[in-house]
Structures are given as C-alpha cells and as structure tokens.
Image 1 (cartoon, one colour):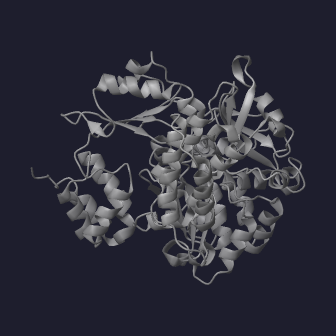
Image 2 (image 1 turned 90 degrees about the vertical axis):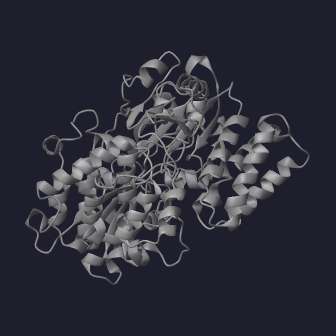
Image 3 (image 1 turned 90 degrees about the horizontal axis):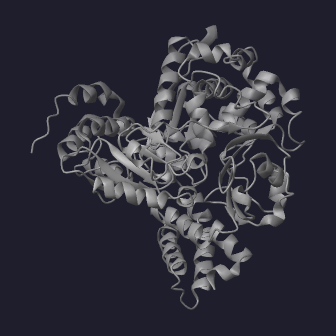
Length: 572
C-alpha cells in the first residue's frame, strides 16, 4: 500500500536546510501523521536531510517509541517499574491488556489503539501510572481502568511539599502557560540582575553560590561555566544544553518544574548563556513527558515573542540567545550527556569516550555547558534572593535547598524541597512515615543507579559531605521506601530488568552484564537459585562497574550489590 506524502513534504522542505540535526523532529512529525514510519517516509527523510537511509533506520530502531511497522497513533503505556509494581501496577496492566484484547507491542487491527508495558514513566509519586496517548494518568486503580481507557480519568499534577519553597515557590500558584503570570510571581527578576553584571562578575557570583550539579554528577556549576567560557570559540559556536531526559525509576523532580514552572528554566538558560558567552540553547526532554514538552515549547515561544530570547535580549548589545527543544523517544541512555549530544545531532544515542570533555568538545564538537533542570532553577532562585540569603539555608559545604523525590511505601509521596542538613529520618517523618503502621525495611537511595540502605542510617544528614562520607549516593534525590512486608528480591529484579532494557549495547561489559544480571535475579526471584549464583552476580557487577564505558554500566549493579551486602540471605 502506497503512502501519501503530500502532507509531509512541505514540512520536509522547510527543515531540509538544517540537515541531520532535524532528524528527531522529522521522525516525530512523521509518526504523528502516520502512526508509524513507513519505508517511503524513511526514504523521504533520508533524501531531504541528506542522512544515509541506513542511519535513519538505525536511529528509528534505537528508540522504543518509534515504530517501523504499523502501529496506532494512540498508544496506552503502562509503567512496570518498582514504585508502580508495589502499588498494583502489574494487575492494572493485566486488566488493561484484557480489556483491549492486546498484548505488549500490539495495536488493534483498525490501528485505533496500541498497548505497551514500559519502563518508568517518571510519575512515581502517582503510582501506579500510565499514559493514554499524550495524557498522563496516575493513582490508577482497577476500578478506574474503564475511565482511563475512555480518556476521562483525571490528569496527574505535581505534588510539591516542604516548608521551604525556593525552587518550588510558584508551583500550584501560577498558570504554567502564562508568561505574564510568571512575571507577576517574581519571574524574570534574576535575568536583569545578571545582565547588569559583566560576565566575569556573574561567573564569580555563581561560583559563590556553591551550587553543585543536581542531576547526580555534583560538578560545581560555576566551574563548569568558567571552563566553557574559557574554551576557544565564538558565541555562535557555544551551547547551553539542558538535560531533561529524566528517565530513572524513582526520579520525578524535574517533571514538576518542567510542567508547572517552565519559564524558570528558560530564564536560567538565558543567564547561563550570558555567563558562558553562548548563543545556542537546547533542551532535550524525554519522550514520555508529552505535557512537559508542550509547555516547554510554549514557554520558549512566548519568551521569544516578549524579547527574553532572540537578538539583543533586554537591550543588551551583542547578547543573542535562542533555544530549541528536542523530544526524545524512549532511551534512558540519552540521560548521559554525550549520548544526549549524539541524539540532538541526529545519531543513535551512544555515549562518547571522555576526554575530551563537553566544556571544550560537546555538542557538534563545540564548547558546551550541559546542566540539569534543577541546577539552573536553583541558580535562578539563589540569584533572586542573593548569595548571602541563599547560604542561610543548608550547611557551609552544602548551601541552599535540594529537591527530594519520595515514593514507594510512604504516606505522602511527592517532591520535597528541603534545606540541606535535614536527616533522612526527619524527611520521612515530614512525609508522614510508612503507612498502615508498618515498619521501614529499606530505602533505595539515589535512584536505580543508587544503593539500598537500612534503617540504621536514619540520622544521616542530607548533605553532600555527610552522604559522601557514608558512601550513600545523593544522586538525583531519590528515596524509594520499602516496608517490612516488601520482598526485596522483586525490586532487585525490576532494577536489573530496567538496565537490561536500557543498555545501549555499545560496550560489551554493559551489554552482556546487564542481561546476565537480569537472568540471575529472575531465577532468584522465582526461587530457582543455582549454585554459585550469588558469586556470579557479584562478579558480573564488579566487571560492569570497572570496565563499562559510561555511567549506565558503571552503576547498573550498584543497587543489587548493596542489597546483597546488607541482606546476603536474599540470594542464598
């Protein structure tokens, strides 16, 4: 059956001069028209963007949300990872499968609807959760499934908590689509302050705030900007990249900021661009965040219309900066910054070997400052109030506040903004404790790439220095709680399954190791333990940690190994 390309060709003609960097947008646009990516569409994209057809096909196969076989335009995606699993997500997925009459990866014969069971959707505080096309739904129950499938189940909203609201101050109080509302609630006050300084003064000011990267790497923000500014290159050859590919089980802090306060990120990027001397901004957001993507695109357009983006911003001569938003399509590895660069460039999201580092050879092999969403929003909040006031919160070595993601067996799951220095026990108490009178058994700290800890750590302060001393990763601020009734073999297996699914396959230690880890834990979880499985599991974990190319493989065994060390009986 031939495919009508008449509605697609004008779009291709418009983007053709941009070349390969428009490959992801072209694939998304085509799939929105056809529901999938027929061979004729792939060929047309290849010719228009001058990308080899094999490369187009390779990018499509790399992402789980692109289809090269007939698929419905509307796909129901149900989360299968730990937070949803412990709240009945498996049973809900089974009921939806039954009602639709579809298995995972299938669509109805008339292509009216498709069905998939997928890794984390980033709505862990609303577990169990799912997507109905672009519509997010949380707190699902078996009784709610008919409404969900009818499209009438209420959409989820971010749940912010905490008595100290610096980064979360506007969430729930403003219309996230309104620039006027953002400005009326303190928005675009930090940018004029920044532009009144020369770039070197601004760099020194940001360094003095003591903000470390909030995506998990904890690299000092001011130092990264200084390195990027000092790298050779004109402003047109430098980039600000925001990593909004928040894809790790238990992590959902950035979603709240992206959906409910998107202009704060745009303002933060603009300040970063002035400081670094960059004209190009890019936001890469995961494909499973359709509402956040739509609101970000709207925020960029309205900021541009109002003169906050574009040429001579706020009348500053020679300060030109604009932003493009790129939507991912289901690949956790793109959260690794160099893989993210490859994705924006229209390639498979494979991580690069370091060095060279992004501050000198990042996007398009040009100087790039890559930052997490929370990092830039924290910087805006700190500039608004001034460095001295910002440092009144937190501790000497961990100033300010931190966003923490609480999910699992906790009474009030959600995003909590806390001053650094609050203990784990105090934060759990703030969140209502473990529900139903149950005792706490374990906490997964730092996300899927983190570690399990026991109840002996409740007095541990949440600071960079204290957690580093105790070898407990802060990561992206994840705390997933498991009560006394939880069988920890199940989340161990689910974490292993996640990494096996998300390994890009570029390096063999991760490609093979994640598969072996999953297979062994699947046996252990089903009670089919073999002799030496425990030692093999530890050996596989050690090999991945020491020899994998990037952070995915290097941390894929962290949680599993930590659980074995604390509770060896789990694998005996």
